[in-house]
Length: 424
Ligand SMILES: [Zn+2]
Image (cartoon, rainbow, N blue to C red; front, side, top):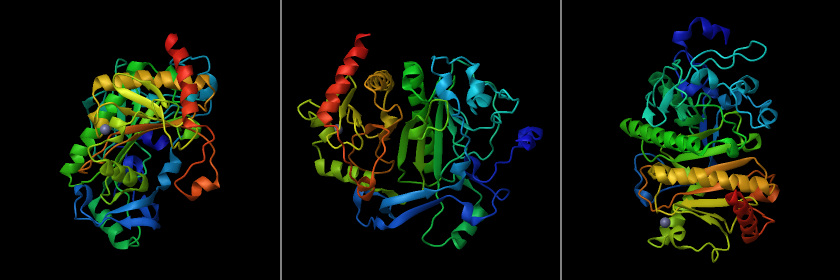
């Protein structure tokens, strides 16, 4: 940390920070992020399906990203639950949280109570609200001027990613020659979208609707910008996964509300689950299930707004697993328009409060399932809200869950709770 202060303007990224591998920071091939397909559950895609390019080998199956740097990311969660209990989101609270993003948004060094600097302020901003800033393949992290407080959200390159984004060509060649053939350098872009002002990541209810909408809008423009630049660099067939981790147990390691987006640039296929979705939509043809279903004679519908339908799935991944989809048949998060996003922000917040009020675990993931870029596939984008739960061995053994709560009962509980919330 101290070292960086003296040479502020020329920060040299350590190995894999912001996904950068350079001559300066590369030392050991076994430190690189790896994408590893499980040989026991991976199948080559040989058909002409979904209009995929034929240049590279493609698979669907189970894969892992092995990324040692992910373990190095700061954890700022120590006191957040206590500090936010009284809904105090004042600026003084920042110090108590070890929020590394404050140094970026305020454009100056921030210190904790013991005088230690929190975060060094170096960053790369892809979009400030909807406005483009740094190029998605930039390799020089830098400091920024104070971000105006009327800005709602910023999308940054994740400093501690699971994929490499910029690799020196000579290192790339070296890796290709020396890495065992069953391993592969994981390439991609990991985005992080944060609110400009500090709102807690532990609960949606404290985040104003317009800020949540701002996060969606900033994500959308950043993803589109990254895809555009990636295609310029000859990447194609790109799976994109936007998601929120709400609460520590759901993987949210930063105190400030944020979403993440994984943009996989390996061009080597997609996971099992996406394969199932793609094939299911293919089989439906013109009779899209999400466009036509009544979700169990509406028994399982929690709320249907002008733009969205929320329901409990008939095959939950966890108890109180909620699925939602835009009423419009669109394929990707980035096709959402501002009125759909505003409605989503408003409804998500209310549903989160309704879940809180009936005692559902506040640690939750929100996942947006989208058609990858470059895939010529029929798809209706949908989201999942998955409350945290401890799961057992049977559920590890297959793509299966044992749920104790009947989905239509879960729906009616949430619906009743939501009615109370809407009354207020
Ligand atoms: Zn549809």
